[in-house]
Length: 408
Ligand code: NAI
Image (cartoon, rainbow, N blue to C red; front, side, top):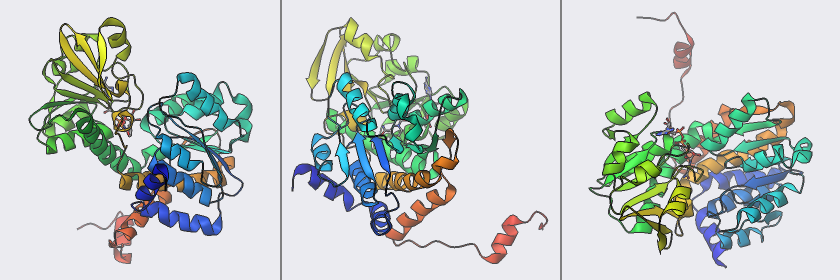
């Protein structure tokens, strides 16, 4: 077996939820006649989702959603799966990136699956001629949902999109555990740096940030959190972390990870105050949280080692991982989220694709919550695979929970 196929077979063994969905898809072919366009991180777990959709009868056209996250051997292996066409290439130019997006769209897809909204953006700008054929879409990440909600608020989103990211089964596992473990391990494997005893700065105490803070704390780091939301800042404070502004944190931090989904979190002002040897990385969706442009244009720099660029600012070394792109996928050894976590996220994507294919034409343009039954179904499949049983409400309990006049 070639390396891409081997990676897929490794991932598949730890993806029981997709395995169960695949059995039904193979038997019932619920996605027959569906052309699915996808822009996701092309690596082994995504490939298992793609083959599941193809097993359900879909024709799948996929490219990457980040120029540095594609694994070329997996992209090659995907092209060997019947009904699948993969155009992703690692470290491609911006032009090649959009050319691949266009190739995926050229087939007149009926369903889109995005991680960051690149397909939907293209469809609503340069490729509006294709909008009529789309029944609906699914969006994987927080930043994509933010962008979609902004579009919808302006009345510009022309088809229904399911907010897969916003489900409990996504956020509480993928964003918290997935980003927490994988971003931290990417920093460690790329730098060979100790975490214990370090000042570890997490920008943003959202779902991703709190996972990361917990993991770093677990390894003995002194965790600093920066926030703009007073409630989340207070949560971080009561969870035992040091809360301060980024200006203050810049002077203290040894290792920084941004997870805000916002722009310009660490820039010129902070760069000048960083300690010698500071390590900067980003786990948010886009490479806009650390001002790489300023570093590139103002100061001397060199590639320190694979995945690390070093810049000399005021005589001090600043080390930036993966060009400020999402660190858990974009460093050379980054494998993305743990397999079991993506089994849940992609179990949701598989069931959401089926739902939007069946129901999309009845819905108008906008962002929709994933139906609760789908979220619960994914949790139930996972519990079943773990052989874990839970209690069910008794009739008495149902009555009690639904009543308003049963008191003392
Ligand atoms: P979230 O909305 O739960 O958290 C973001 C937090 O950042 C919020 O608490 C917000 O108040 C805070 N924030 C915003 N601007 C800030 C600023 N200027 N300074 C400090 N804090 C600020 O979002 P979530 O789910 O944690 O996602 C964060 C980012 O990570 C998004 O871009 C998302 O797409 C991405 N993501 C990345 C993954 C990965 O594999 N690396 C996986 C899942 C999400």
